[in-house]
Image 1 (cartoon, helix red, strand yellow):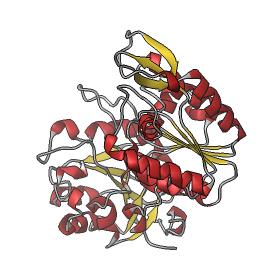
Image 2 (image 1 turned 180 degrees about the vertical axis):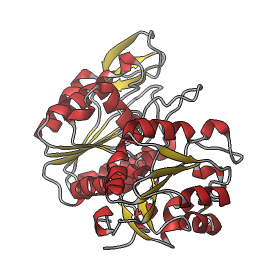
Image 3 (image 1 turned 120 degrees about the vertical axis):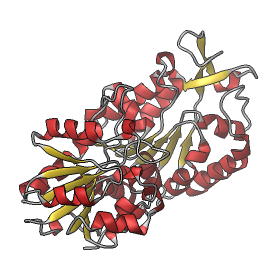
Length: 397
């Protein structure tokens, strides 16, 4: 993946450049953008293209429209927000079909250094099926193609894999940074190298754990997935979240880690409560004190101390998945204390996308870590060692 053409490998002067960005931003019910992080993440690539005299046409999906075009999933508010952020007029090329004769006419009138945005690519059902006809229609608009949407690169769609069959292509600055930072951490880490894994289910992270056991010196497990591992080790975990059909797999992963000499840390205490609510009475108990009625919703203070001690010794750290139900204040301490420790350590600190990105943002430490991935599923598959179709399809150097 590190041998792909980048923006700097393309001759951009006067060229029509089709760019896949990730403008799948959260919106309020009134159609207001509630978080513009993903739009800001694309600005470096867009500005570079403008500065190099290209005609820029952007495309993205938004949400999951089920039956063709839906007004609430239109990218028109995104065009307005992008215009504010970049300080330039953005031509919004509206069409239910995304590409039609009217769009082509307006696009042909664009001057060098100007920017246009197509309507939501998922207004066409062929998009997610990587339909050839739609891919050709998109490719017909441009001379070159750039993928700067890491968050959708694990999917083979018309707007990333499809168009790249017909155009010389490259990765944008955002995708380049993602694969360089994470790729170097996985292939050439400063050691000790640890992974901190959380989230609800072991089944979501099987591939990640299996791949990382071959690369890291230690794995720290919190979140809901920890209770499946603890039950596999014979502990009583009460009513905590457990995937009973994954107990044998958890045992195999623990065995593999032991055989490889990888330290595997599980919680030694937990915050338990009757219900997953803000006002439900809670207490700290040791893993050995669980009764059949207890439900764990966060790692406990002794576990935090152990995890922080390991973080402080490490030189490369990958974190994917919260330590507890961080959206509820009384179950957020584990996640936020880990975020705080990562912000202070002298190490390369990489935060996987999805809930981990939300957690580091909410903790206030986002600007104190090395890299926060913009891709949830994409960063997971990258950590699993899988090939990402949207990047694999790009022209090699």
